[in-house]
Image (cartoon, rainbow over all chains, first blue to last red; front, side):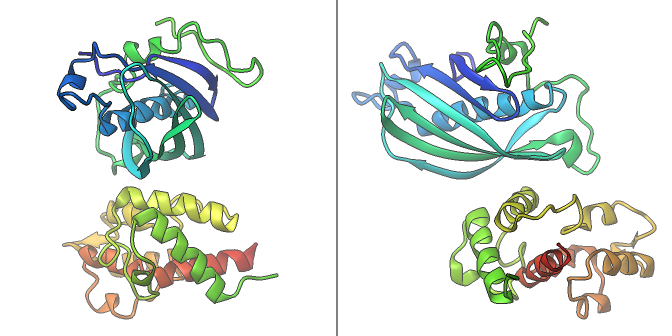
Amino acid sequence: MRWIWIDKFVEFHSGKCAVAVKNVTLAEEHLHDHFPGFPVMPETLCIEAMAQTSGILVGEANRFEEKVILAKITKCVFFDYVKPGDTIKLDATIESITPEAASTSGKITCGEKLIAEIDLMFSHIDQNLAGKEFPEENFVFTDTFKSLLRGLSSGDGSSGTLESGAD
Amino acid sequence: MAMSRDEIFQEVQEVLVDALGVEDDEVTTEATLMGDLGAESIDFLDIVFRLEKAFGIKIPREELFPAESLMNNPDFVSNGKLTEIGLAELRDKVPHTDFSTFENDPDINKLGDLFTVGAIINYVETKLAAA
């Protein structure tokens, strides 16, 4: 299993907001245990999917030069289940961003149905842990994540500064 | 029109309820952010973000919660306590805080106790007056 919980970005406005989608399928092993006879996407993984959507948005705002770590789940409310066959849409918006950290708000929907509201905070760890040192390379944004942005031109054509992620 | 202290308190209370997941009545002016309200380091940034939004002010890094940069400076800290210079520096940086108890035993572990809800209200009040 790969630790990637979104399938692609459908919108990306650099430094502002992004929309990703995920298709949920019964081929995902864990759904058979969560729960036997009643497969639903674990809410923890919905949070992870939102963290990946928002985290990439925050990382891209600084051209992936910062290591962006999920630091706090500020708010998280679930209204409905996510089931196999569902396509969920993850909407993320940057609320504040500074050299040390960023806060985001987010919504998961399935069609017209609101699934969850998830607000998060991210830390730029090199700026933020009292001089503690981390490896040079950006272990957060691996090629797997960057590949999600490949081929995506900038949102509405006016607001994006996306590179093609050709590394 | 300028906000009254009571209005500022209500707004700060709302910010802290949202940022820390505490109840309204826990947020009194004497409550300490770390000890009483359970704030951790990332919460301080969250609080700063929310205060900026709530009051339409800009809060420069370290201005509201300057403890970290202070503690990493050997001139300011010796044997786990703030030195005279350190205390002076702190007083200078956070004029919105009451130091009367802390000065008798400036143990850096007690620095967190200085950050009370009242100190935030003082800070916002000064900031709004200057705007």
